[in-house]
Image (tube, rainbow, N blue to C red):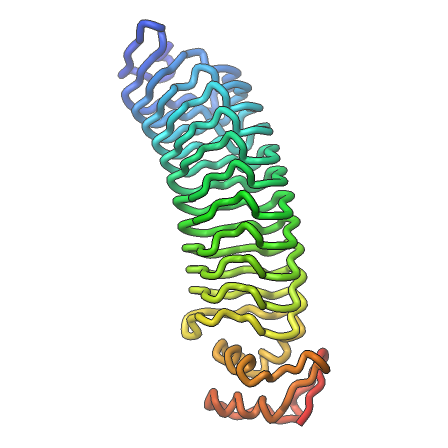
Amino acid sequence: MCNTHGIYNYTINDDLSVDVVGHVFMRELGLEKLSIKFRNVTGSFYCSSNKLTSLEGSPEKVGGDFLCDRNQLTTLKGGPKEVGGYFHCYGNKLDTLEGSPEKVGGDFCCYKNSLSDLVGGPISIGFDLDCSFNNLHTLEGCPREIGGSFNCSNNNLTTLEGGPEFVTNNFKCSDNELTSLSGSPRKIGGGFRCSENKLTTLEDGPERVGGSFFCEENQLTTLEGGPKEVGRYFHCNSNNLITVDGFPIHFDHNNGIIILDSNPVYEVYKLFDSTEAIEYINEEMLINVDDMTVSYTVIEEIFNTLGEKPVPYNHINFEHYILVD
């Protein structure tokens, strides 16, 4: 049976299970079950794109990757207890992660299933955790620390409570039902994307984002409470921002990009079209939100500070603000 599947370097144990030195390739064979009972595989184990409804017969320990994606699995029970590389179970019919290995050395990808929580999943993940495109209502069961990136986008989350406390790379929680960022890590090593939610505030979000920050397509009227430091781009377009108060204190104005369009405040910002102008707009209190007025005198001062020629008074035509002397 092993030879039929191209497995030649193997040992049959007393319990008739099989140890394999090397990889096992059993993908795209139309298998409804694993006909060989494996115990240890030093390389990777591939059983993707079959018709498996159970992982019974899977190896207990896999030195490399274990890929069982795109089957008809409703449970991970019977699968490996330890995986040194990636564990991919996406594109199945899972409604629970019970039966997952406790430790995964690489990525753990369980997206495109029917999960409502992460209970029963690995407690240690070396790289990325991708649980997007499920039916998550909570992040309960998530590991405390993610060695790579974390993606919980395209779910039904109303809170990030229960999520990871530290993420080395990117954190993505877009396209959920979030009204608050409570529960997000204080520090993100890479980028943070909370786009397409129902956020009215950035309070309780990360304080430091090493990469880019994306909060577009929410219901924000202010950036107050947002990160104090952003390493790359800042995207807050398609909100209802009337000021740029709360913009990060630490931002690379030489290499960073600010995307503000589709906000009322964009018509003020585009006068200068300079990331440095954000700082001066706030410092000089250019916008008076009480009566929605903008001072042309202050506009001139900011242009002078930037070393540029001011836009003439009669060339400024605001839709959301009143221009005053």
